Image (tube, rainbow, N blue to C red; front, side, top):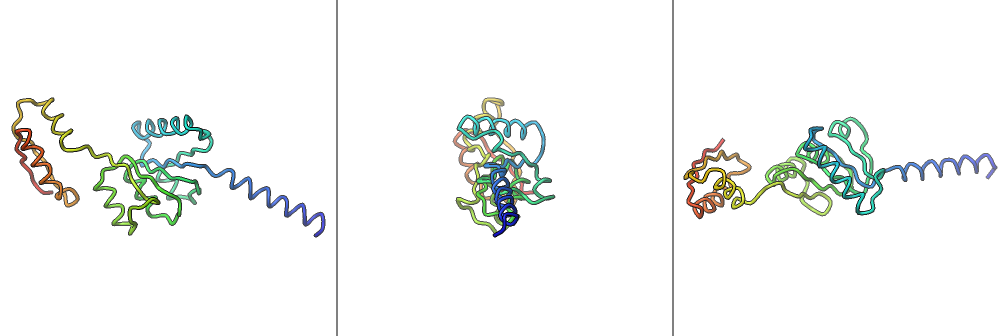
Length: 179
């Protein structure tokens, strides 16, 4: 190999190594740029940094960034919200995805629509609160209430019996409709 060939090979090798090193360790993908999403991204970034991940190893992106270009290849994607989870479910990336800021029913819909299965590669931390906690809040806010109104969708209708049981134990009656 000539010196010129060796230098080209060395330059290509260094360029490839720099490109690999430039990939972030964690990519936070936000469904929106509202204050709630920004605050969560700030908190996650600070916690990752506190755990030893350098700030420049965390990249923030939006759904539009993922849909418009070639996504990076981090060690982990964190989807913030339903739109971000949906966008990442549509990619062919083999990178683990942790979905956050979404209810269980939405995560299950994302799985169904994308053909994915819940796994260590695609999982979620649900936003849902137990019915007991929600009803206790209703009781604190409206101590005189005897009935609560609930609208059920196809995604949530299977939870009706559990809510009615939790409400009955608190002296509340559920008045509901399917939408």
